[in-house]
Every structure is written in C-alpha cells, then in structure tokens.
Image 1 (cartoon, helix red, strand yellow):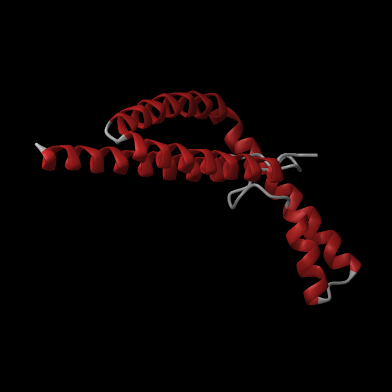
Image 2 (spheres, rainbow, N blue to C red):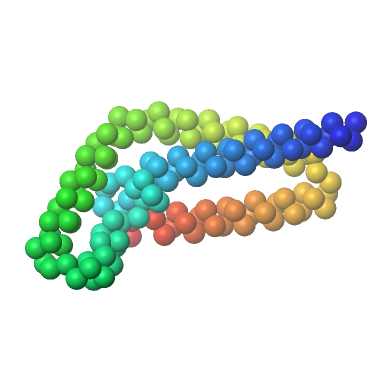
Length: 140
C-alpha cells in the first residue's frame, strides 16, 4: 500500500514536471517580444543582443543598420507564420493549465500537512519567478 502511494506520487510529480517543462518551452517558443517578433529564445528584444554584439565586434553604422533591417524583417516573417496559430495555442494553453492545476491538487492531496507546506512554498516561489520573468519580457 505504501509503495503504491509512492509510485502514484512519483507519477503525479512526473506529470507536474513534464507539464511545467512543456509550458515553459511553449511559452519561450511562442512569446511575442517587444518589437512585435516572436522570440524563439526567450522573447527578448533582439536589438539588445545586437547592441552588445555591435560594440564587441566593432560594427560600423552601415553594418548595424543592415543587421537591424534584416532582424526586423526576420521577426516580421516569423510573427506572420505564428499569427494563424495563436488561437489554437491559446486554447491549448488554457487546457494545459486545467490539467496542471488538477495534477497539482492531486499531488497536494498525496502529501502530509508538513509536505504540503513545502509544496506550497515551492509553488509560490515558482510563480514569483515566472511573474518576474514575464515582467522582464513584457513591453514597456
């Protein structure tokens, strides 16, 4: 009986981790950045990267203008590719949230009161970090 509960808790924990990883991966792959493009690597402004790179590489004004134009065009094209998918992605995101919340509730019920406190603290910390990450990515 005790081993069955442990296996069930591990399965639920695995589903929680997999759901979180899927959510993070989807968020990063599809988040729209502040310049209107889709950020495949975190959704940040690509011009920030190119500001740093231009300085490090010693790019001249013409090179920098060309890079900015190319990157803006790339982001516009990628954004256009994802535009028809957004409603489906939003729908899947909502369903994934329901599954995740249900899994969290089941996992919590398998824990002792002391473990639940630790679990709640862990979830609060994860939500805080996620909110901070989203705030850094959102347009000003």
